Image (cartoon, helix red, strand yellow):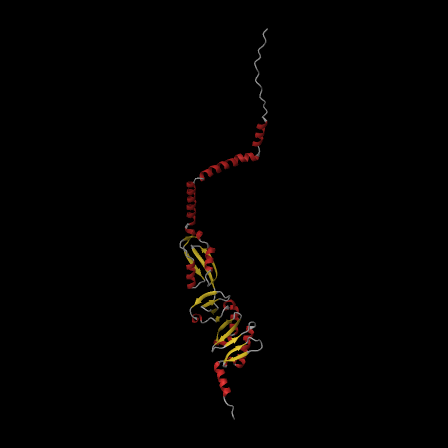
Length: 294
């Protein structure tokens, strides 16, 4: 008998997955991995392609031009254009100064207007106390101004200036007669003490038109100047009270109607009177006359 020929048997495959295959399948079932495949991978590919595309300088310039043109087409639409400048609260001269300080070439897009910077430019003008800007419907740039109100004329060593109640400079004047209705203050540092000067001027109102002004002396006290070259020298402190005493004397004894050059009130309780030159000479002449009966 011949032995039976047994054909080689094919090894049976193990239906169970390998360890790595099993791990890969488990990984693909996780939400994070699936999200990465669905979102992350397309994003990375798109970003890479876009970065490569934009790395070309020619393409960069083309994209910049498109963005600039799109922006310009939006900003220059008629509803965003400003064509007029309106100024309220300012006189003719101040309005002209404001226009010179705002060299705007109308029409201009409202996107190109820096309102805060323009306000700062207007506030640099001395006569302006406050200013506000806004864009009104209809393409109007509205400027509302609160001007400084001059209360006195200040005579310095070099010029005549108008000052407001805070001492801020308002404008220059050529002649005192240009603002004759305003009181005159003078002297070094007088512009820094306008409130004191105005209080003295109000106190001196009973003197009427005889009052010429007040002068700051030595940057520490005041003289009240009257017509006929008369002066009232006031102390460093209590100036208003001292001036009230002089006015009371004038009302009772007409002391300022006499031949007096100055009344010195600098020493409290010891006022000193100085006669003018004509009165002094006349007094000296009288004293030189021989006594009667000699």
